[in-house]
Image (cartoon, rainbow, N blue to C red):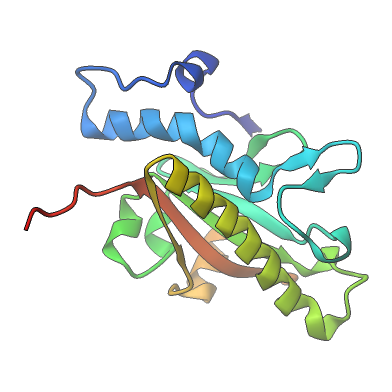
Length: 189
């Protein structure tokens, strides 16, 4: 099942619509920036060789990007730039212990697929996967900084509970979570 967020017009017009509630504006903003964020985190930018926007040891492309939204959990498919539904449930509350994760408009979940790393020595796979996930998350940080969005990379979560909620297999390892949302207004001193 493919899922595409928003429609082409919404993604291109760049406007928040008057009369929308805060939740609607958040959903609208997500429909505008989420596809770009996903592509920057793990998309293909050299289709002739399947090269991605972030480095990968021996081009094993071991880090999978999963996307937690209010209406479900999805796996990002870089070649088709689409989302595959994994669970029609809201798993955001399991992505961390901080209060903001429950209502974040977008959570990116970085998962190492160790089966993809056959050319990498087993003792180095986890380290390589964390390096790739770090580069992917940095791409998201740069995009957010340039577009007045907030983001935070997080490692404070229950890996067993979240892996179970995501339906991960034995050769998949949850590495990091990254929340993307609106910048809070600065407090006036």
